[in-house]
Length: 165
Image 1 (cartoon, rainbow, N blue to C red):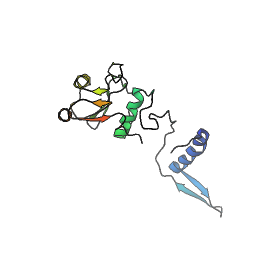
Image 2 (cartoon, helix red, strand yellow):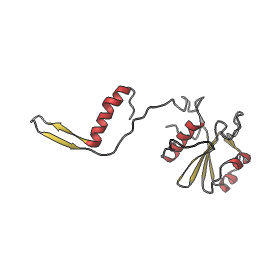
Image 3 (tube, rainbow, N blue to C red):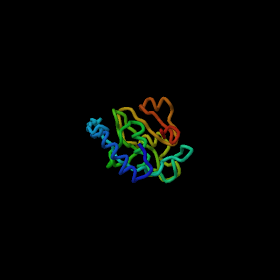
Image 4 (cartoon, helix red, strand yellow):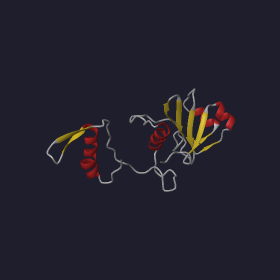
């Protein structure tokens, strides 16, 4: 759920959710109180941050490697990265035997325009090793289809192949 008014979210919406989860009592017109069983479950209260993408679906200026890494990993796997994830290499995480990499914002130390953001043989050599399947997000790919297959790589272009909704 999304609620724009913080006061409503904290005082009204969250209280309604708690009642649905834990149960509540309803007093009928005849004065009898009826207990409604809760459905169980839970919820988490979160605040939305700045959007990662502009109105055209491009990565917004100022987005950090860490912000984009969290988004990509969750949108690809349905599982969030741990809050204390190091994220100091292009390998952002592994899930069910697949390694997820992000080439963005000079993570390999090259701060030039598109530096290290393009998958080349040289960049591939510098990536943390993984023997299984790899999904690599970057600005462009210079490896052949046969090389990608040989290396068990699926390449996804930023921002075109990033799920934004």
